[in-house]
Length: 121
Image (cartoon, rainbow, N blue to C red):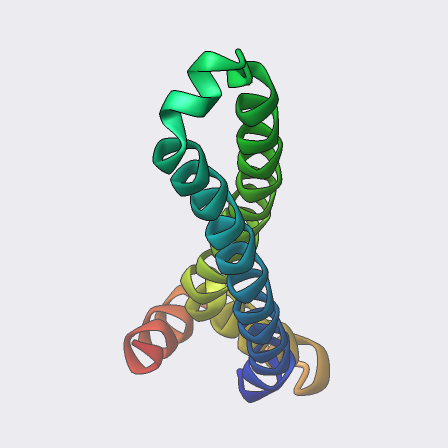
């Protein structure tokens, strides 16, 4: 059981740091998009007069696409971290039973398994 924790904990730590980096990148892209939106809104009369709506819209949408790509990646990593945390108790039990059966030549009876699962939780 402890071996499972020692394998999963560094992975979760690395993935958490990766999410932090993604969040910083996403905030920069969000700021860029908001700056473009603010610039367009402040100069709305000029934009309308010279028909520059499409130019500004393309810039804003391009920044939004980059932002959404980072948000999507961040969501996938967060889902994987949640998956690891959720499956850790079952993985620990499975590893403990595998070690017991393999190295101690023990027969895993229902009584031992239920007692062990009760103690694990």
